[in-house]
Image 1 (cartoon, rainbow, N blue to C red):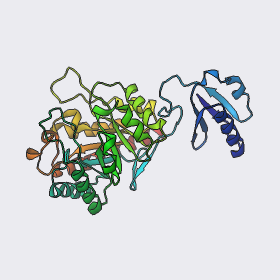
Image 2: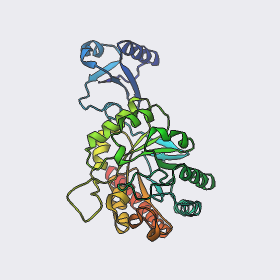
Image 3: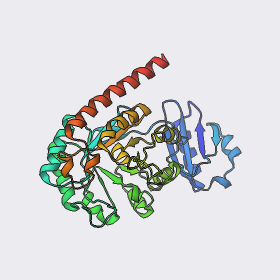
Image 4: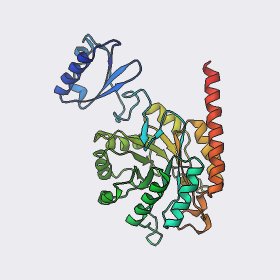
Length: 341
């Protein structure tokens, strides 16, 4: 349920209303926009007398929210959420580029890639330390050593780092990590999501192979219900009957999620296509669709990568993509301005 506050309501009046609603046992989330203030109520609102609340002097209207996700719902929070990570903003502006290797393999490798992607304009560094692999015989990552190497790259380049957590038992290794990545296989690992909800660090949440957008938002709700509102949604491709690509990139997820939720949305063109040659066109399409960022695999020697070499860009190809992405974003801005003028 949402309560719309009238323009000009005094802070003291709003505070008293919040306290009254909390006394009924509700969690109250306050969303203050440029013009409107909205109170989002989480709890069993069936017993609440809507007419009583609506009759209050400062209340403009009361509306029930039918969707099962509340905190992630745009009705609760009409303005886009902007998440800041080490001075880099995600949401509501220029798309951020998150780039780096699928797996951290060595100190030399991660430092080379980190330097290269930073020169090309990447805002954050990605790299896998703990790797969930389909085969138990595939490279599983360097674990804690991989995070140590990521932190070395962060120290040298200043890039915030994004890396995947698979189990809450790995948390002690993640102290210096800037963004937790929850992979597709763990999107519905509710115990892990609950733990991440108690922390105050951004979470990049990837859509599962066969999950709906509502299920993705419900997983985000698990994190946000714990008090952590810094969630970044990631479309990384879904499993369909098509075999020409590794997965099928659902670009419609960008505008749909933007309509349903206030959370930033990034696209992973690497895992969704599985082919380096397709990363550039799908990345540019994602920018045109309104994505808040891209998370792209970059390797200094893709043919010899220990994981996902076929979908990894060289530093040179990433540099070309970064320039093209900026041109597309500027074109979108110009087109939007022309339509609204």
